[in-house]
Every structure is written in structure tokens, then in C-alpha cells.
Image 1 (cartoon, rainbow over the protein chains, first blue to last red):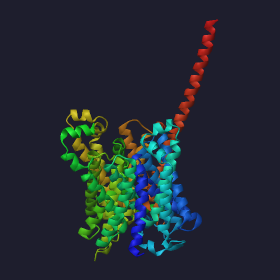
Image 2 (cartoon, helix red, strand yellow; image 1 turned 90 degrees about the vertical axis):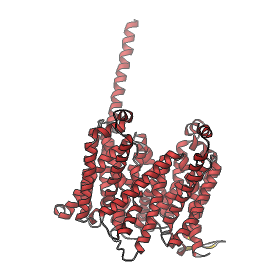
Image 3 (cartoon, rainbow over the protein chains, first blue to last red; image 1 turned 180 degrees about the vertical axis):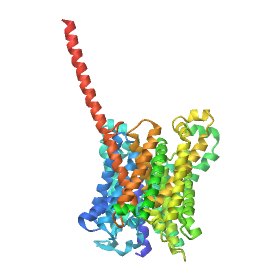
Image 4 (cartoon, rainbow over the protein chains, first blue to last red; image 1 turned 120 degrees about the vertical axis):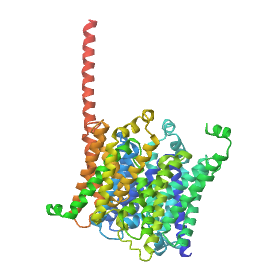
Length: 295
Length: 308
């Protein structure tokens, strides 16, 4: 496969897994949690590096998952101590991120870990570090990892589909039915962290946040059905990857940034034109019908 | 270490981070009561494209012009967040997440273009984005101090109006205060604080300077006035102390140390704060338990006495 095909494929995998996870992030009203985790993952990666002295592979994944769960746990603890949820998220992620930056600047030094790289991502270099897989042949390492993560995400979504649905829409009902809501909260946060870490090295933190929130938000304006929303959101993720790559080659600029812009464009078009919740359809729709629908 | 403190450049930088901390602590209280803690995070990311565009136009690193560019683009971000939340069923945190990531993405794109632009000496632009207070020159410091002083002045001069605006908007409207005008003023003050802070502590940690002092101050007082004062003091001291710590070693970043200082203050407040601190609540709980046990015993013995 050609160089650009690998990049588009990798970004599409990011778009797919983030799109799927993002649906639940939005429905659970935890969109900013994605932003928080995408920053604290940095601390996890630094810690993993300090322990194992290597930047890639399973150690990084475990470090990132650890940081993600730590974030979720600290935010939950502070909230239970009556700190407002958004304030506790703001406190936790900035403090953990600060620790990460300090560790990088002092002990880890100038290995290929640096804040700028982590936040902007270097998808450009992905096709150059490859590995051999049976049956498929040579495949970039990051792509293989993302493929694995996508399978894990799909597995968990399909396996607990009903539970996700109930805990996302009506946590109280779920609890009364005997579904372990807290367990699912942490399982979900683990999935968010796994997706974030895997995508992190490929595309950078900011594109991860964009891919997690924006396609799902666009899908949310198209449909009221969860299953449709999942497919739409995944689809929008892939579409943004392709459009973004095209913009990047056209303007000769950052690929991750262009893909983030593409997610924004898709959302904006949806925001204007979506049949049910779009601006134009609201404007066109007769007043009586509008009241009826909003009631 | 002390000789370090006396170094003139360090003093300048310390003064500027301190006044920045005071401004951020004050405005952070307003954001806290408007329930917009994470708004500062969204807006500081949204400022990035404005910085780069301003740089592409003027081709040099003039702090005041970069700040104006940043402010315009952050205001645009605030407008988008407001628009998406009010005109569709998108919730505010989703709108913030989208705005911050897409704006930042655009900023990164433009930055790549700026790096290519001929003659464009973009050194220092990265410092502006990731925050390195030590890299500030004297004119930067002066710009920053003047802007921060204006912000502090606006917060304190209109103190009564802010209070009404936050806690009783209906009454405020009744006495002829324009809520819309106050909202615009609030957004402008918030954005100004954020954009002048970006250079000192970086895009990401700017949010911490607004959130942490306000939440910490909440643990010590119920009065809004005291909260703003305390929060400003905490912000100012963390700014100065963090800068001093980072100046003791070479290559230590300023922003993270400021944030960690205020995080330490928050932890102390969380445990020992006069209002709802963990320790206080535990003691109150124990006292309550004991007094109810005593009451219970009295009732039991009292009852016993009467029935016989």
C-alpha cells in the first residue's frame, strides 16, 4: 500500500474507534472528560517511560490506562466531596498534566518525548515504523495497535450494548435493575483511555479530542436512535480523516490539524442542515409544528 | 537561591506572574459562580489560531498585537459555544470540547504554514503557546502588567454589580443593570486574562490558574467579597512562588510549578478548610454523633423515670 493510503487508513481507524466511544461520551454528558484524559495520558506515558525506559508498546498503553483511570477516580472522589464536577475535572487534569510536564523537563530529558510532539502528533512518520504480521504482511506498528484497539472497543460495545444503553440514558433505572453503574463508569473510562493512548502517538492529543467529541455531536443532531448514531458517528470519523488528509495535502500543512478542522466542518454543516435539529429546518418549519415538536 | 531571587529579570517575571495570578484568581471566582470553570480551558485553546494569524499578518512577535489576535479568536470561540448550546440540543460541555479541539487544530495547521513562511522568524511563537515566563522580555512584562491591572480594576470597581449579576440577575435587571452588557464585559475580561496568561503558563495550564484558587478560596469563606480577595491572594502567591521555584533550576518550566503550588494550596484547603473541609466535617460529624447519643441516653433514662 502507498504512503498516503497508510496514513488515511490509520486516521480512519482513529476516527472509527473515537467515533464509537464518543457517542457514549456525549450521551453521558462527559465530553470534557475526553479533554482531561487526553492530557493526563501524558503523565502515564512519562511514568511508563521512567519505569521501562522505552516509549512504545504495551508499557505505554498500560501507563496511559493507569493515568486515565487515576483521572476518573480523582474526579469522582472530588465530586463526592462536593466539589463541582467541572471544577474537579479542571483541577485534576491540569495538576496531573503539570506533573507530567515537570517530569519530562527534569528527569526524562530530551528523548523523543516532548510536550509539543505529544500534543500535535506526528502521523506523517507512521508508515516508517513497520512490523510483520502473519497473513497480512508488513503493517505500520501504530496501525496494528489501532486495529487491535478498534476490535476491543467494538467487542465491549457489542457485548454490553444493553447495559451501555441503560446506564447512559437512565443511570437511576440501571441501578434499580441491579446493573453495576459504577463498574460500567470505570470500564467506560478505561475504554476512553485505551482509545486515547493508542491514538495519541499516531495523531496527537488534540485530534483525539476532536475525533471523540465532534463526529458524535454531529451524529447526535441527525438521529434519535442509538444504533444509528453509532454508525453515523463512526462514519463521520472516517469521512473527516479522508477530507482532512485532502485539505492537508492541498494546503501542505499539519495533517492532524486539518483532520480536526474537517470534523468541525462536518459538524457545522450538520448544525445548519440536519433535517430535525438543524438551523435551516427550524427556520423553514411552520411555527405550529415547531412548538409541537419542541413540546 | 537567594541571589537568584535578586536577579532583576527574575524579579520582573515574578512580578508579572504574581499580578497575573491576582487577576486570574479574581476572575476565576466569577467563572466559578457562573458555573463555567472549564470555559477558560476552551477559550485558551480557541485563542491559538488568532495568535498565529496575527503573527502571519505582522510578521513579528509584538505581544500586544498577538494578544489582540488571541482575544478575537477566543471571543469567536465563545460565540460558537454560545450559539451551539442555544440553537441546538448540544450541551455546553460538548460545545466546549468541539470548539477547543477544532480551533486548536486550525491553530496547529496555521502554525505549520507560519513555520514555512519566508522571513517569518517564528522563534518565540512556541514559547507563547506553551508558556515560558522566563522568555518574556521587559516590554512583554509591561504589556502584561498593564492589562492585568485593568482586569483587576474592573473586577473591584464593579464589585456590587458583579455580585448582583451572578446571584440575582432578576433583581439586577429590575434596577436597570444590563445583563447582556454584563455578560459581554465578563467575557471580555475573562478572555483578556486568559490571553495574557497564555504566554506565562501555556494554553493548557491557564485553566488551572482560573479554577484552582477560586475553588480553594471557597473552603475558607461564605462571603463573596472574601472569596474574591482570598482567591486573588492564593493566585498571586502561587504565581510568585511557582516562578521562584522554576527559576532555581535551568530549563524548569514556569507554568507547571505555578499550577502545582496552587494545587497544594487546594489540597490543604480541601482537608483543613474552615467551611466544609474534610477534617472539620469529620469533627462536626463526631460531635453530632456524641450529642445525639447523649440525647438518646437522656431520653431513655428520663422516660424510665417517669413511667415508674
